[in-house]
Image: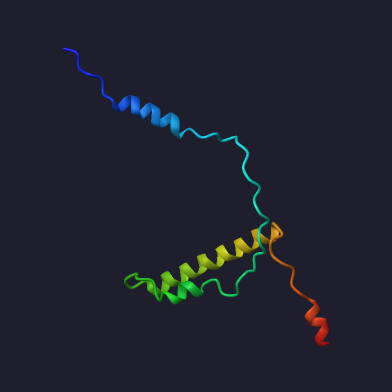
Length: 98
């Protein structure tokens, strides 16, 4: 008894070939990145959500989440500064008032 071949195999092969992408094709040039201005309070959004819902540990949990967000913001600012995406502070205003 010969059983017919499942048709899924040939469809699967065709769909795999169709999904193959040319990874080495040229891509359009990206636009110049806009300047990044660090914010004064990176934890504002977290605080706006209220205490974390951790039974009996919401205060401690909130402190840990705050620490993580502040450290992430510091590192993001450092990376943006190294990439020269943070604008220089405007010192002209200091001299105008003197």
